[in-house]
Length: 339
Image (spheres, helix red, strand yellow):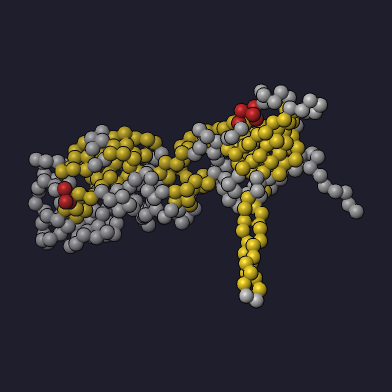
């Protein structure tokens, strides 16, 4: 028989700190729903160090109302928004000289978008006039394609060439069609990645192609996140990664049985040997959601990567080492990494 393999030369690392990655553009996977970070990295999800996702869009304020007494002008309330991932405050302002459709031929219509440009200034952007209103961006009678790096606050639909006060009925601020909000579409965050991958977000629906370009482009999604800084935990033993297990169920039916399976993730665990049982850094991190890296052989590249909430149960025996039985309660199974 060959020699049995053991983990006698293994090592376990835990997330002892975090490094900030500040405000970077995320990469569209191509479906305009899944966005990843350009640099392959897992994200910390420890309390106070979670990722901050910042799609371009309106956050608060920005209500558009008629500019009473002034033709072809609207008032826009003060607002806050994300532009290129930066929280930007914009003062209340009037946006005037809105484009009206040409007088000839009669009956033309035009949609004018009220936008915050990349410099944080409120301006208007006219679409192409047409015989009727359209919902198609860039089409005749449709809203314009929004300038790259800008966000749309609302639209004004005008069907007369004669200068006049804008009415409330001509102003539209519908999230998803005439207004870009930072939190629409909503998304889920996956710091743990999947299938050996890295952290990403998944929008509930694809971003609309409403920005200028050929073909039309999409608004930017930015993120600020922390990468874990690992420290070796030593001495330690008996690491069990959180992994997917399957259980079988059956229901008796006439003439036989119907089977079904159910998947669950076990609780990871390890045992740490402590010097004082009070002052060790790992003890300050109990109940925190942390990353762990386990090398079956500390002199080889492959490792197991797991993330979960650290639970600690200490024992102080009279005639043995002070120990902490630690658990890792994960939301996803551990991943294998080649290096």
